[in-house]
Image (cartoon, rainbow over all chains, first blue to last red; front, side):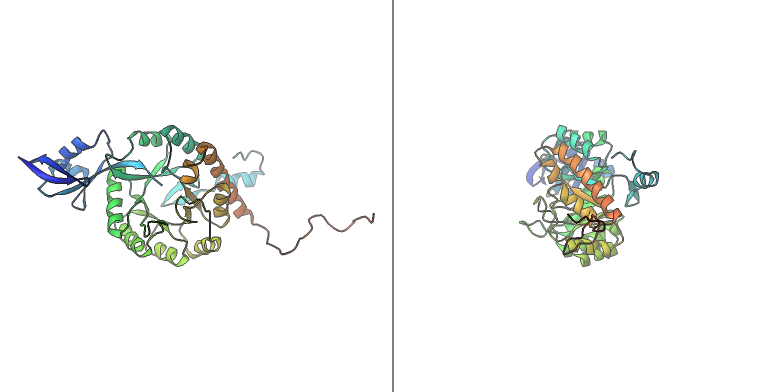
Length: 68
Length: 270
């Protein structure tokens, strides 16, 4: 069973019971300084393993880049 | 700069001209942005040539962000990171971005940027002040990118910003300081550091900022998009130092007519 989510503006399907930690592992592409917003709030790194995702959740997975 | 040839008192003064920002002491008064840099090799050479100790970075969706190698370069250069909220258009977006940056970079310093117009990228004063107040209340060290309005600058300082960072002209425009008088007035209006941020095109712009009394200069495009970023970074470093020295030295008053520097007394009749 999967749950529908929006990740970085695009539709995504994740296994039911997935956590933010699981999503980050899938998406981070080797970045270690990642930050995650879930439905408009920050999810602290320490809460990633225990934050389960629900259908319809909107997530932003962000990483450092160059900027002025 | 070598101070070996200076009189001892001046050399001591020069060596001890610290820049205190957010409770931290810096020796460099040049803050460098990384935006627009063509490669990591160029970035490293420019950072080293600039002598900067504080470098701005941003957060973007992970698939669009540059590799983690940039942070390795910056770490190797020993600079402190200053995350920005570039691209935010409301106080809500900026506050959330600052919180995310705190998570990602492990710092509560933020260059607060809330943009109100696509074409000019000018700050939205209302949203900016709102975001600044919220972030200060959350314990952030807020360096606020603002217009050159002395009244807004004072309001930002009043809500607890650690620095007020007025633009010289729009971001990336290279138009220099369009209203030097406002920058000087803003400097008078607040006691927190004033950092000229945005619009610098070349070294003389950076020197002028310091001559007007700014405590530091933040620039990105002027270096990263220069034909030779490393050389321009060194030029900016020397311009900031020169402008700072000139400000301290006290410039001569402007005169309408000439005043001879060679005495008239003893002029022969030929």
